[in-house]
Image (cartoon, rainbow, N blue to C red; front, side, top):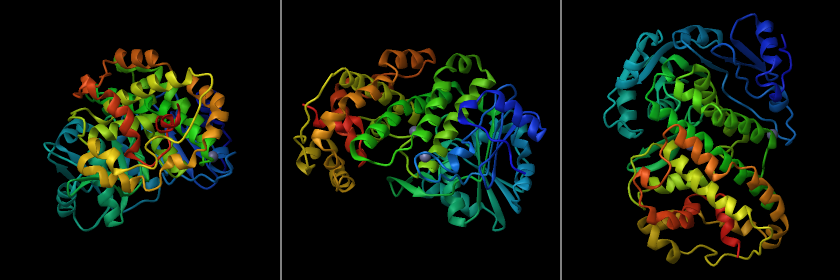
Length: 458
Ligand SMILES: [Zn+2]
Ligand SMILES: [Zn+2]
């Protein structure tokens, strides 16, 4: 039976009620994308609906978007219902829960019924070859479903192992700390190098708000930082589309923006521990993984602010113990300030930058032994795709996009309101590195961002 049609704009509107009535189950929402059902449940009161069919079937961008995730549940006490959800999705076979010692304790009574559980020691646990071996060695051969119950690290170890074994992967986040839950790649450290490896996307996400809302506050604070970063990357994506004709989907961007605005407005609720606020944050984090699936790349979730975070992670400008989202939060503030300075220009003069094409000589003093890797990444300098005349002509349009990014002061206030770390010094990096970060971080990825484009401005 075909579910009634729902538009994105109806997010929290009458459609929620209609869906409840349609399926007759309190607090559960279903979307039909033409071939499969996407189920979203909530904690009562507020509904969370992902991409409606007009999105997935015939988007105005001309592409047919696809999501491989079959079901997403964001609800209090939903984790024990794991076997029922799997059965409803037609997934059978032995289930193995994967925890670290902290999340095993945190899940407590809510731990789902599984055939096996593997608990990896929390201390010094990293998404690396050692942890993957630990998991796969202790995994019985008949396991058909691996369930990651934990944060980003447990997810990466488990989703990578599931792909290696060719079995189903289920995501059960225990904190709203990072946006990788719905991802189909794993951020691993392999033989000492940070690499992104192909991994399994979850067939099912069970986000248990009773566990997530009890996680240490700094974890959700980090999640907020990761989400606020979307203001920057969505602007970068749109600007790249204007300047080079790179694929851009306004539908995905609007969906993401709406979720980001919800998170921006729910920080008070997070402080109070409101379930509803945690639902919104968790939804935003999951959606950003889905948006990446819809667009087929990480454009909707990662731009100049993430390049700053990656740059800091390389250890080039000192070492930071900050979580991913904390670094992204600081990167977001740095970009917001710079972007609004640029946006204040009425008109610009553009030319090829002085370091174009990139040379080892220019990179070496900062990147050192990593210079070759950075040059390889930028074998095609993305600024080659930007015509200086087009940049000058399109500037008013670009300034318009920048004006939609919340002001630096506003973002700072939001992050300060949840006691987030907001400066380089806060995350252990010297403020003297500010300009180096602005100048060199755009080379972390061969991706056009406004920060990179700004090198062409006189
Ligand atoms: Zn589209
Ligand atoms: Zn991120």
